[in-house]
Length: 232
Image (cartoon, rainbow, N blue to C red):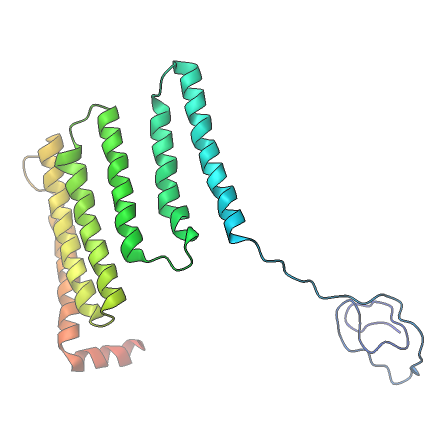
């Protein structure tokens, strides 16, 4: 007797295929008490991976990358030059991606400001390393403004849990204003233009989107109509 699904040869006494599990049935074959042709196929037991062990391995890989870059830089140049940039990038990537995984329920309201702080420190190091003069006049206010907007949105969405249209509408307007601020800081720091050129376009788009979201939030009838129209 053979399995109708996979074609595996079956003993007359077997009621299902040991390979694919399909029920064996043949009306012309009399079932006997003979031994099955194949041993039982036990179910595979999934082994859980240790969270601490996995994070320890990932952390070790990052530390190894830092050590290798520092050793190569010192052995070739006799001092730390480019390896500082590599080390900072590895630490920044670890803080952004790996550090929240250490916690079972990471709070974004806490970790997002930490991420922005890590980015700020990395930009500060690059500014010092390159003898630049753009951190306080461009990088710090740009990153700080973005951090305030993102953190405020996350905090309101997490703890208020209502008025999302107001929240995202205000965030859209502030994002447009942030674009204007960025162009002003770029012109002031790097002296590219003496007036605002491109930032008004994203500001107008963000302003329109923000106002639309706020208007929809203010008008319940309009919000209900849109929910029925777009199956929201």
